[in-house]
Each structure stands twice: as structure tokens, then as C-alpha cells.
Amino acid sequence: MNIKVALVTGASSGIGEATALELKALGYTVFAAARRVERMRALANAGIHVLAMDVTDDVTMQAAIDEIIANSGRIDVLVNNAGYGSYGAVEDVSLAEARAQFDVNVFGAVRLTQLVLPHMRSQRRGTVVNITSMGGKIYTPLGAWYHGTKFALEAISDCLRLEVQPFGIDVVVIEPGGIKTEWAGIAANKLQEVSGKGAYASQAAAMAEAMIGESSRKRQSPPELIAETIGKAVSARRPRTRYAVGFGAKPMIFIRRLLSDRAFDAFMRMATGTARGADTRRL
Image (cartoon, rainbow, N blue to C red):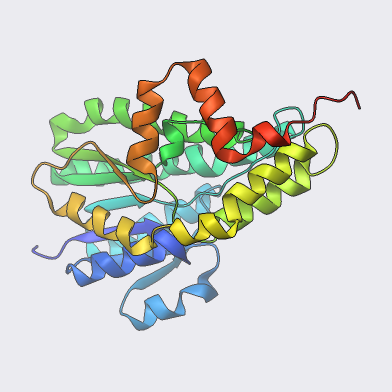
């Protein structure tokens, strides 16, 4: 078969939506998956197959893969894009929320990968694209659980790449920088809910401003930039293992490599405004 088949998760908005459209334009049969199916009408109108999927629900994931195989007989590309940012001080974030963050950002992606790999192995070809973040290489104040998921997915991707290479399967990591999506607003709201009062309130206010302030929004890259990068990666005969792209991604990763831990701590406090926001009073 000449037509390749792709599955994109988190496709109801932002990077996922843009990626589904990009792969469709490249000639793929595209299946776009998300919990909010009603938000994918534009994708359906563009000839993209829309699937209801919750990456924390194994039944919906298995049903989606079964439908793709029944419909197309194969799956060539999996883009693990579904995810969200849970921000808040380590002291404040409940372990239930921490587990939920890992369930979506890590275990959902891994489980879906497990479901597609038998089909890719039987084809002797395929590409798994994991959307991590520059936050899988750097860290910011009040983002421990989010960064933990992205660091974890980076490591899992490396191990997976070694395992599946003999079967002709590529594993590609995309590390976006600041992108114009709903992500920052959701993460900032979560941060204020969790740590907007109490000992970390001043840091939370500064960090939220760094996420969604006017200067930050102006510099963010469009999600189409990430979609185009994914398109290039899955079209390459030998794709790179990692693509750092979008506002700040390459410079921030370079700075992290260059600086010591303490020096990067100081840089990050200054960059996020949390040095001014730190409140060390006893509460």
C-alpha cells in the first residue's frame, strides 16, 4: 500500500490539530484522537478520521487501534501528543494529581505505543513520535511533576529506540519551546489554584506571569511550526532522534548544558521572575 496511516493524540487543538492537518496534507490517512470529539469538527470536515480516546482509559485506546486496523489494515505513524501541564510547589501538589500527570503524559503515551508496536513490527516499519518539551531537558520553579513526566518520556524514548530499531521502527522526540496553544493558560491556572496562596504564593504569581504575560505570548511560536517539524521527521529516510524547535527551545537547552546546576538555578530564577517573587517569611 502506498498510503500511510497516522494516529495523532491530543488532536482537539494546538499541536495535535496542526499535526493532523499537516500529515493529511502530506498524503497520510489520518486518525485524530481526543476526549473532546466535538472540538474536532474542522478536522472531520478536512477528511480526517475522528476518534474518541482518553489516554488514561485502556478500553478507548484499544478500541481506537482496533478501528484503525479494521479500517486501514496498518499504522505507520503514532504521534503521542496528548498531555497537560500540572504546576505547583512540590509541597502543595497532591500525590493524586501527581499520579494523574504521569498517567496522561507518560503512561498514556507508553500504553498506546505498546498497542501499535505489534502492527509496526509486522510491517517492519513505523515511526513513534513522542512530544516531550524543552522541559524534558531543563527545569523551572514550581513545575516538578510536569518536568518529571517529560524527563521520563525522554528516557523511555531512548530505551525504546534501541529496542525497536532492529524491526525498522524509528523513535523520534520532539522538544517544543514556547508555543501558542492552550497549554500555558491551563498550566498557569493550575499553578494559581494549587500554590496561589501560602508560602509559595509570590513565586506562583511570578511564574504564572512568565507563562502567560504579554511579553511571553508575543514570542511564542505557532503550533504549525511543530507540525511541520513532525512532517519532516516522519518523511525522512533517517530522521534525527530529537528535534528542538519553537521559541527558546535550542537556546535554553544549550544554556542548560553550558551552566552548572547552581548557575542554571540562578539563571532560571531571574528568567522567570521568581527570584523577586520568593517569599521566605515563616507562615
